[in-house]
Length: 97
Image 1 (cartoon, rainbow, N blue to C red):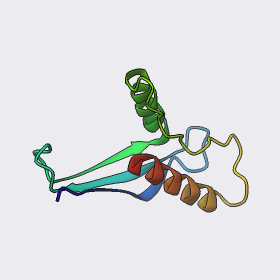
Image 2: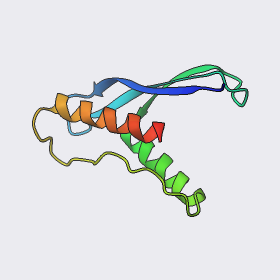
Image 3: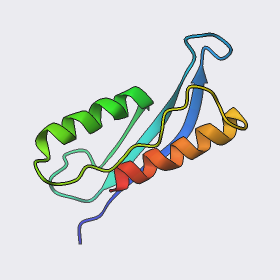
């Protein structure tokens, strides 16, 4: 049976405290599918790259619904750690769907 797992983990804040700060996430994929040459891969991606991916999927999806991304907050509500963790969970769910 073919199995593919994807995990969004290890958020890192870059340029913390400045106007151009951002968070990226480690995306880890493991599969035994014959469709993939590499059985594991790991990359770091920012939220805006997920936005790009979703747009590309929407262009090519036809009538198939594309999952939503977690929201983008102009200002952190609560602690930034809580926001980052909720976003990480939302990105994980997006990739799983």
